Amino acid sequence: MSQQPPAPAGTAGEFLHDFLLAAGRHTPDAPAVIESARPGLTTVTSYAQLGALADAYTDGLLTLGLETGARVILEADTTAHSLAMLLAASRAGLTFIPVSPKTPGQRLRSLIGTARPALHLQASDGERTDLPRALATARFGPGGLTVEHAPEQPRPRRRVPCVTDPAYIIFTSGTTGRPKGVVMSHRAVVAFYRGMLAYGIATPEDRIASTSPLQFDFSLLNIGLALGSGASVVPVPPDLVRWPRHLLRVLRETGATQVNGVPSIWRQPLRHEPGRLAALDRLRSILFCGEEFPLPELRRLQELLPKARVINCYGATESMACSFDDVPNPLPADAHRLSIGVAHPGAEMLLVDEHGEIVAEPGVPGEIHLRSPALFSGYWDDPQATRRTLVPDPLCPQSGQVVLRTGDLAVRGAGGEFYFRGRTDSQVQINGNRVELAEVERRLTQYPGVAAASAAALPQPEGGGLRLTAFVVLTAGRPAVDTADLGAFCARALPPYMVPQEIRLLDVLPTTPNGKVDRAALAQGARPAA
Ligand SMILES: Nc1ncnc2c1ncn2[C@@H]1O[C@H](COS(=O)(=O)NC(=O)C[C@H](N)c2cccc(Br)c2)[C@@H](O)[C@H]1O
Image (cartoon, rainbow, N blue to C red; front, top):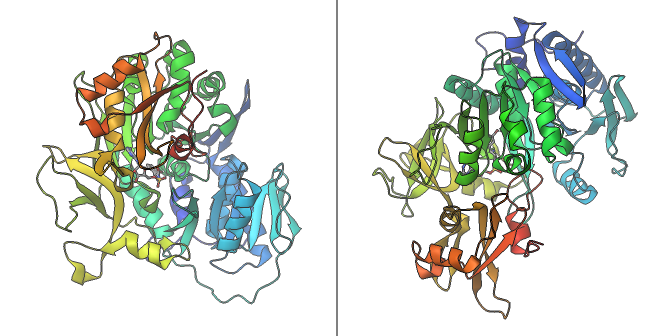
């Protein structure tokens, strides 16, 4: 069998597949993946079974003769088979590009044109058909790896995989213009995983529910957290995440002990199924990331799950993530912001002001710069964007070391912990005044009855200038909020130019495929509440 032997001790670091399978070697019969395809049917894949699947897929991929470093599109949701294929791609020296089966054909074709993959892989029941004729295609599933359209046999130019090779590329739906391919090396991903495990989030008994699509690196965090801890991954099919009853059923039937996801996954369960949520007695911890958790909803979640550990995970795809902090449970009544903590062990966050000077004193805002072994290699085929993001170490530019310029603003608290203060690009200028949209949103969520809010600077209907517009979701069962009174409430704490000129009540906030509030959709003017 031609599988890649684990990196011998003492070589330059570890590959992704070595790290993900190491813990399970001691517990071959422990559950690695626990799936709930439909009510009452739970499928368990042990570490030994996952390893055997990965072996078989590795042989299948190696038989195709793709060269080391070739890209493969992995179009799948998170399942035991897609995890085995991810491990196999890593072992075969291939770079995988995770893509959701829901990706529109147009965007997939554009991504294929940019990344020039050697192979498209999808599950045996995958529905993708209109792929470019020149692209090799194969399917994977219980019947093994089935090649539909074989790749040409390129003359292999490389022989030795290195840990600095790209393990995966994630194409982010860049807020501006064309999607950017974030290239992450084996070395960076494993360094992040080790930093995260050092924070102490999971034990081998944990069953970690992953509610993000595989194309979102939050799912890769969950996979590394679970398999790296010898625990189990509980993938929640994306179609079920949106339906509170289905989501809670899957969590109950799989015995999930930890649920990881963006804040918006909790909005509907909190609104429609608080009783069933509170009844999840196996649930011990919740980890969220990607955006701020609206505090009214977080407090409600803590009321229903008073014993749960809640972890705020901050970071960007360009370093996978970078900090973890435990949210006090219950959150003190006078707390208006959550801390994002400090960088995970082995990394360091710095604040830099607009003059490039280091900000040391508490309470003074600066842009987070991250020093870390987990930094991405660069944006695929975009050296300019890479140079703008991986910048010379502000403390020692001569050294050649680069740090990640996050585009995030933060202040330090008295204890050295960081508080997120929005993005540099969500600073909008309204009538010449600098407005931090996150600040407006925070004030709106302090009004009794508001569950969540988002602010956007929309073009004035009659043209000329921008109009600060707020979109507000109310707590279930609350009497209608008087938007004029809500506006006055904002005026009592914010400068006039930061008071929303229009407040629209919505039933839900639109979300992106990755589950974050879809600010672009709001900017197009979401439908007002019925
Ligand atoms: N906890 C927070 N509070 C507030 N604002 C947050 C938080 N986490 C992010 N963000 C914002 O999201 C940006 C990044 O967006 S991203 O590149 O799409 N990546 C993400 O969101 C997800 C990110 N890779 C991530 C984070 C944690 C774990 C994993 Br695994 C992955 C950051 O730069 C921040 O602006």
